[in-house]
Length: 239
Image 1: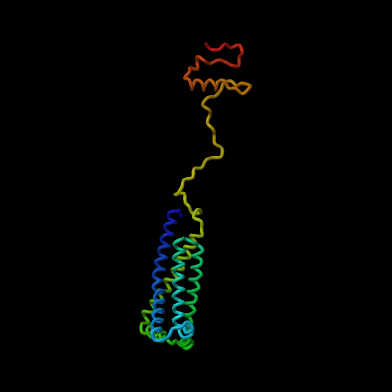
Image 2: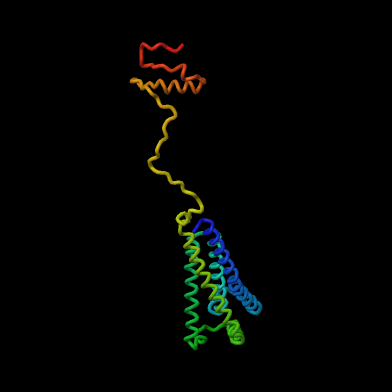
């Protein structure tokens, strides 16, 4: 895959991942707002102290803790997708897997344990019974909402895994020949013949014909009038 296509695919997956995180943020913020509303309503009629939160207000504390954990999880995922950090994506993936395992364990307990409501501590706020009554009245709607949330979480986990794999893998290994052209040359290149080949060789390393050809090329002299054999000591210089 070429670098441009890989970058475009990464941007599309990161945008889809952040969009799903934005949708899940509605559930997390709703849980926090609901917990804050319960606390404010309780504080109107009772003195709210920290030592009264547990076990009297355990439902509010659990709801707020779940909302905060969900918000931090989504924030870590968005930051990881924005900065392309494999470490953040791995951290987000681990937390998402743990959260989905807790949700699966809770769903299994609710499904197999018919008396699960009796195992819970008493909620002095009464909001737990109100919430259960609302769920029973709108069971079909709540069921589809839960399925949508779980499916979104699973798809987000899949996208986070794909993004982590793309970030961890070096992109240079996947560059195609479309991005650059490699000019291959043989190891042994045949050199072209020199422009001027000397006809006589001086034993001391002097090449007169090569020297004369350079002089002719530099001063525009005619070679027919100025050629003579420099190796012959009896030769007379040109007139």
